[in-house]
Image (cartoon, rainbow, N blue to C red; front, top):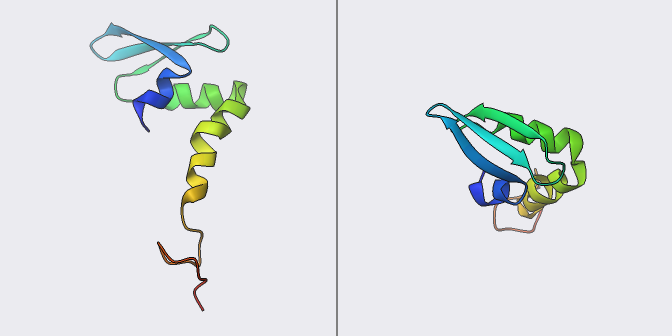
Length: 78
């Protein structure tokens, strides 16, 4: 996941060399996670801010080919 998307919803600060703090800009709750990991931030968005989660992390995937279609081809596989 791109870090720019996360910056829309969290203000990050380093706790120590292995942990990071993320302040949710939507509800001012603090969440912590290991550096390089985003699972706690993702869970928070999904549980507490589902509309924003869907806008950023679900709707962008709609441009991908669906099952049964070749990439770059709008015709179903027969």
